[in-house]
Image 1: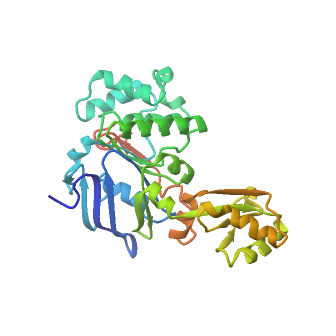
Image 2: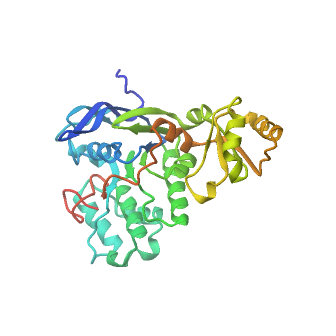
Image 3: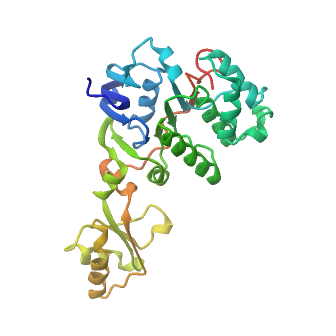
Length: 335
């Protein structure tokens, strides 16, 4: 029995360098079966390099990878018929319809029942446009078709790099519901994303990397329970005074990511102590106009990655559904 039993995906000591730059520096990931796993990291942390190694697009300099309980090594590309993936930009024959593109992919990989093409078109919400040429598709529609291609072989493991790229809000919600439904059916969904709020409502387990190393991994609820945050809003000209007033109670910091954050402070305190924050400020003549308590993946992310925001990806996309990526619907890497 190995130490990776019960895991759908695992890496140990994964290393990859590009010249003098080390993209992966001993990366250890443990992805349980049957979950949505959120893979997070700031720009340049090594997320896309990891995805490329996992799909055989590049080879690691060292370390090991296990997919679905078995080692994944150089020359094991046939193993990817068990894996669906969308890594980098989906590429299709533009003059063919979505249905025809999926037929081409099905013919180039593991055997796929004809009804499966209709099933994945339905899952991707493309039934109404399935006969339209892909050259007329929007970016979001091409992204949905890429997800359909990744699902074509009905894989047990799905690897998705920024799957919400190009989707409108309704499309993002539909994608989230689809991925959660797949996990509920026992499939494992590994999602690399910069949309922290989306990961917070979708993922069961999260892994955060920085500088090519894992800095935190575990069930999302457990990680957030250790990251209590009380947010309080005061008049913008009183922010500094509020921070000083709250210092004996807990560390506080200004939220300045957007104009919407003007006057807001984040207080690192157990969420059931929000009333104490309000009382402390009122005692100093500072009155809160807003008070929120809860757990915040963004605060945890920024703390663990040294204040770097999440990236929107390190490269483009390559779809795969038993390796569908790269060249349009070809036998190597298609769509």
